[in-house]
Length: 401
Image (tube, rainbow, N blue to C red):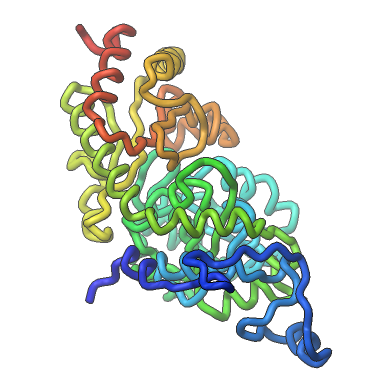
């Protein structure tokens, strides 16, 4: 039977201590033991159902980690306090001084800044490549390379990574393939395609309500155990622990993720097809004109569509700014960073979420200052929202009346 992330999540059962349909929230930083010997043992190895200190593990985060593992079809998962902490802990668990990373050049600006500005301080170098160019990747791998890093669907240019091909390269060279799947939960399952580690910013689609910041790491049981090791685990020692109440909230929201993703994708597909028909430059992997359309079609879980993120390129920064302001005035959506909210959000990545990338490098990767990244909401009547968007474009003479 083909893997279905929603079915996998729905099969999970976790009840409150008094029979509540939701698991009880653990409001404790530390936990008691009947025997001193049990505490000693837990410092040496994990004991199922036994907890030491909430920076290490707590029941609420365990419940959420089980749900994330079900979503990503992984052996285990780790919950963190942000997507960036998930990335940082993963990289630092794998790499040490003298090591090298091969990274896609089109990644989230915060990740890019961490790779370019922070990791070199600790003797870890990063080679940024065109992740679609196999020769470029192979040419940059050497004895110091420890991992290949990419995003399933890149932020903000919506390029699709060939995860299966990247996995073959990683395995051939005995290195890890780390994939950020934030843009495509449910639509793409990277571990089924050969990824070793999958990262999410739970802040986005998985939570879906833009009311918290959180992250996750999914991988083998051994890798997750290494992350929480009391002596050498980056998640244990750097301390990016998610608050139990937030963890419990995300756990509830993840059970509606399949419904939301289908609606996000359906709305985005409609918007993109109509905008392209009107002659606008649109980036969305669900369009047949997208260079990676067939690649994603072959990789994806088709019932969930191509995702809720699209981009349009107006070429001019001022015109793009004016359109966003006008769309906010007309209640098309909100001028805000982030994505995956139930309302439509839009921003200019060139001067916001990708501003960490220099203007010179933005030009190299094709990131125009006039690109608007749009996270389409789950509007019930997307045609009504689209009509208002078109009226805004006509008022600004982007489209003829």
